[in-house]
Length: 336
Image (cartoon, rainbow, N blue to C red; front, side, top):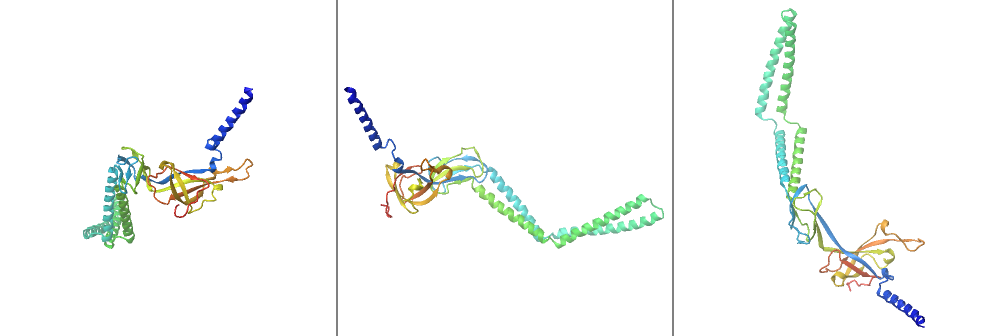
């Protein structure tokens, strides 16, 4: 008799337990259609160096609030200062070359070249007379063939020197060609631009915050050698936050650009926040396609939806969860 009453009692207790678990949500019955969970995100800024250097100091600390212009990190600028000095010296030399091309040869240089040309003319005249005399004597067999060849060679060298000195004198008198002036001017302008570049880089030995925000992470230590473009400090701009949720396309019927959605922030004691949708786009197919039934009749895609708070929310930070009831609660345009 006891067994007859015991079995129905046990079955009744099991059924009651299942009902309680289903009502409490422990069995996750149709739970995906009751809420959609997302999280807050914000603008992250990576601060990097423009040149290779060693880290000299890191005044910024993880989690510290910063204002625009606050010092985050200091680099060793010894090598950059040397590059600035070298570029300045090269620019001075280029400017001197340009001035020389514009002003032409000095009068002293022209007089010196004129004197050398006159000496070359006199030497040529002497070589011509010596050659003529040796030619006559060689014909009379009064001098050797070697002596005559030496006279011929001396005449050839005298003519070449006279022509060279004449060309140098004409170039000095005429001045630099326009092509030479243009080349000297271009070289000067290139070095001026290069000097501006290295001076700008030298000023960046102190990395400062470009915005108001908070230091998320200092990624380097003092003494570490860093490369150009390598992130050194990551900032979070707390004034530019948005929520991100992933919604299946069969749940998008109530979502559109500009729509107001109300969500709860568990980290802020369940505070309700109104968001305005300003971004909707499908996620990559490789990760979001899902068959709706076993027969693969069609697939559902997942969309990423973003929205910004309608009003500033004190204490709201990136990474906090946001819970939305689904179907989405209707919200009036005034946020209520």
